[in-house]
Image 1 (tube, rainbow, N blue to C red):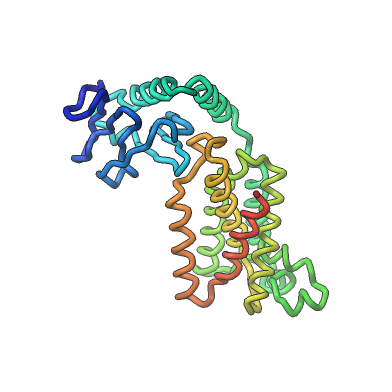
Image 2: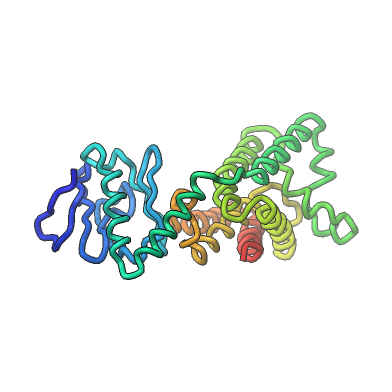
Length: 295
């Protein structure tokens, strides 16, 4: 159970495992770890909390700046996450505009209870898998018919701007890793965008990312490009825009830590610079196009 923590003015505290400082309810905010791996606490003011949610494995704290995931196993006492969630909602309700904030939390709770199915995401994953099966069955002719080439597009093969996004390197460890990583990225990122946007808008954002990725790759001199990673980075751009501009409209469990998204972008830039066979321009083009389409 929660208990009074010496030195806190009018606040309760919830002890954590591993020597971490306790999560403390202070007068104007909650002090908590930024992540399960960081013992130092940060202060999130109650007025900046956008959502508090419990899943089977963690307490999710949505804020205007990011989302923080606190696993149940992080707490030393059984039932502490549930008590902390109730206490946070009580503190939010006590704010001058507490009634409106609690109503907003209730709307987000209802969205979590009835999530939209990520049909566009699953359709794209299935399409990429089917195209890859055709590549393995028919060989190089599939790649030759659909890969992106600025020269061939200029000569009239406009379809390559889209079909190249569905193709991947054929066979071997590199080929299997290429499609596996891209499909995993779509599976993780797609629902984060599709639940708030809906399937039709997400399909538009994916299409914009696909076009933006290939046109940017061509503009930067890439002569042969294939892969759905430009669309995956378009979803990163969409999620970044949503998280920066619509954080208060997103349930905490539908968000990805903002710092993690920017870290993915930074790592990709470094890898793209070090490994010339990776189409960095396509990734960045997809990122920007996805964000713009979402906006």
